[in-house]
Length: 149
Image (cartoon, rainbow, N blue to C red; front, side, top):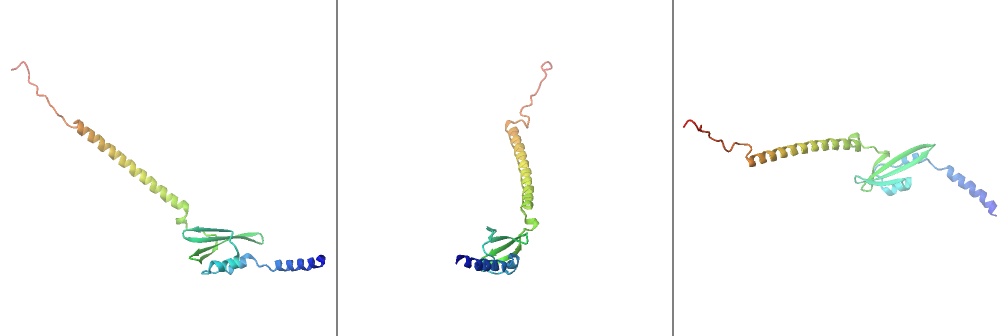
């Protein structure tokens, strides 16, 4: 009896798997403004989920005909605000560009600090000279010739 049931079950299983739609076509059904639950019904659980700059980001990685696809969905307050390929920030907002700007600002701050240190050293040196009286003549002797009086 089990032998007779296994063949129809296998045919049914193969028939169901052959009717699967590609994930690329499934992803095309996802639209802006959809809620998380709706997207979960269409796409299933994301490969990766993270929170970044106040937005939830879901990443889906799937293969279609041996081609790898990475798609992202970004949510703000529960609704999709970005749908598409892997999100790359604008060049001016990239980490490397921000690091470069910060490095320039750091170099300028170091140079300003060096100038301030030199000015403080010079001011302290001038203060010491003034306190010791090395900056002015305190006593000028009056010489009177001894033999001419």
